[in-house]
Length: 143
Image 1 (cartoon, rainbow, N blue to C red):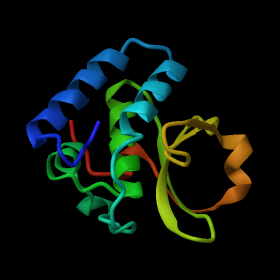
Image 2 (cartoon, helix red, strand yellow):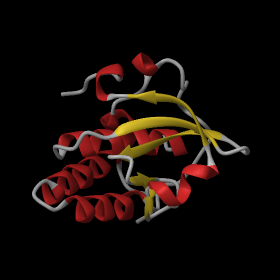
Image 3 (tube, one colour):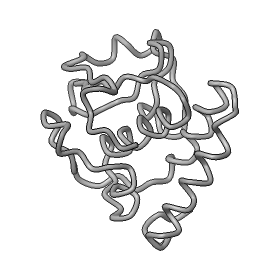
Image 4 (cartoon, rainbow, N blue to C red):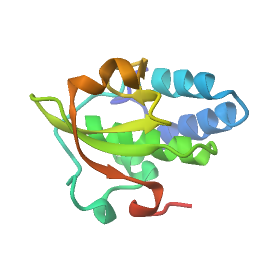
């Protein structure tokens, strides 16, 4: 899919369809579907101020306006998982080259570290330093 050419309303429709499809799937299937859904989103310049979660865009705003960066895609994934009944954590990490947000699920899985893949937390935890953790309660509520 070419996210830059997809109309704004269509992006929202596709995301709604994904949320409906993954709701009843087992965790690993949910994560794989979400990773595949986001893998072709174009990564632009940073669009999130890491330290002010109250100013972060909603997933609808991210998709409608196409404000795709590594961290906004991670935020979109985070909210999608919450809407699917999961309880992820959003970690602000520094990998020595960049600082960005990553959704972490049960400290067993990581999304958006490798595009289109569900990564193992234990395999990657030494590749970055966690600067800050954000729970669901610390991020602007969207429901």
